[in-house]
Amino acid sequence: MKKLTITGKSVEEIITLFEESYGIKNGEYDFEIIDKGSAGFLGMFSRDAVVEITIKKEYYERRLEEFLTNICKYFDKHIFVSVYAKNAKTFLAKIEGDGIGKIIGKHGKGLGALQHIATIFLNRLSDTKVTIIIDAGDYRERRKELIKNIVENALKRVEREGKVALDPMFSFERKLVHEFLKNHPHVVSYSVGIEPYRYVVIERRRNGDSFKTRKHRTYHHR
Image 1: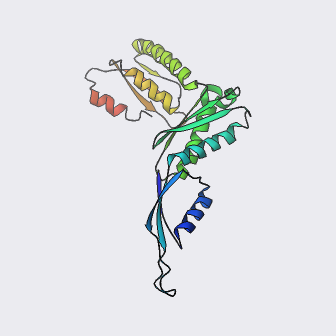
Image 2: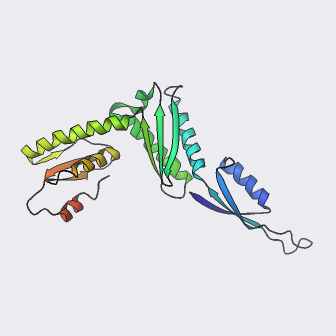
Image 3: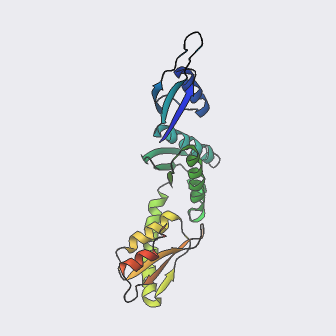
């Protein structure tokens, strides 16, 4: 996840200072001694120790879980948060409890805002760009069914009107729309606008509208 090369008077000093400055726990990092260092002879020709430290995913899982828990407790003290890394760049967070409705907010706006600030938080800790996906009470799964219904109704309108613009959606919702529409070759879809007002446009495929043209229109599928 993140590698650091640290120098110091000794390996022990490097590890101690590293643990204190990062608030990291045993098992959340690996280290390799590059150079043990040397005190030299009579204080001459001394050499610093060099250690390469790799911060593991467990550290980021814990930090993200703590971050989300601290926020969620202001909504309800009985909310439970669990986090695990799907891979090195994607973290999934699950929020459960009676008060999750307050976190989700109207049309999922609260959940989207929480995911946004959680992504900023974790990216500041990592040296690679990471993605955070948060679900609360299976909201995303329920939203997936709703998006499917929205797409089916939009397709009927496209048949009559030729072109339909959907309401603004979160990134994961727009991706669902595009995924659903892959099974409908007679239409093309593309995203328009700037967050948080970005929305999907669905229109009837024109004569001679090739896959290349469709790909050009849909390269902003987020």
